Image (cartoon, rainbow, N blue to C red):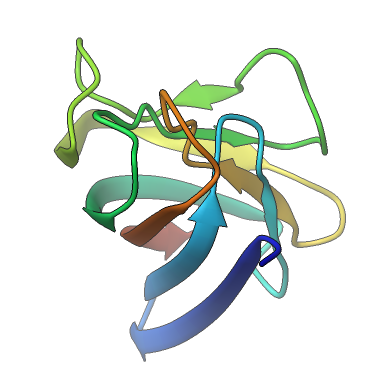
Length: 125
């Protein structure tokens, strides 16, 4: 099978949004473009769970450009783990011109991993 990811963006009222990313066949370099976001925002929380596959850990990143070798925001704990649950203080800011950010789970092994990530963010700074 090939990498697949679905993204659901839910407006929770006011400036608040939730993004859910459901991935199958995730690996070390798989990436999902998240489109339809406000051009400027802050990411406040992230929860990632690996539910199947050969990876032991994940170390998620968010970037404002596709296939970037450097993360704009590294959104994992100090050490990678099978589950990540992070609150950002201060929140991680992003600024894009087209409402698109890029997400990579960065699994430590395999290309057979099933991962679910939920990001909470606010529009604007």
